[in-house]
Image 1 (cartoon, rainbow, N blue to C red):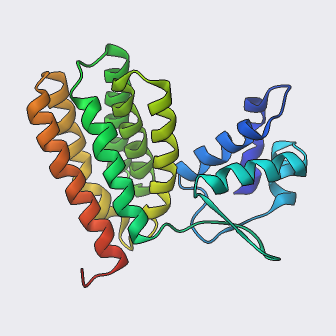
Image 2 (cartoon, rainbow, N blue to C red):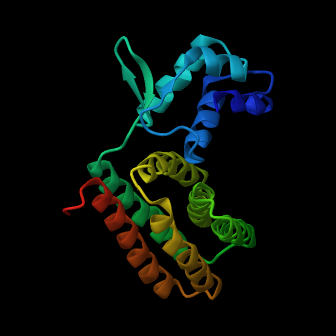
Length: 223
């Protein structure tokens, strides 16, 4: 899996920076390639990306500040598993970012990205590829936030969704978690296209409440 990172080398360009390496690793986490608890090998990743270990360590440090990685003394760097408190906080932030987004008149560019994510999720579901559904769902919500037309909010959401993808790994049955939201994503898209922000916000609130409840219960079935 780490060897697959070699195909990301062109993204680094001629000036290999820690920020670009962090971008690549964050994207890979968002795509579900690095599960919680996995130890990240400096040797393998630096070789795959063609960067120095110092550059990679700086990227690890940046991702540690984003709560994606844990640095364990004398043991190395590991992908972090967020806590149930993290889940609640992530959803609180999502309600703010996505709630503001669906109140705005949609741009054609953002709608195109949202529609592509919906189609990709439906295609992955038909192929019984639930990791692919999860990845499409991440892209869907990133595209939703792009309705805010703010690069800063896009960046906040990108970091948040990488952390959220780590939460998805607590679900023992990915299909049971992701399947209901394939249809729900299309329903929300229809409300946005119809420019009915009041209904879209109400639907989104229920949508996020549902998702948060499922994840919290996965951490503690007694909740």
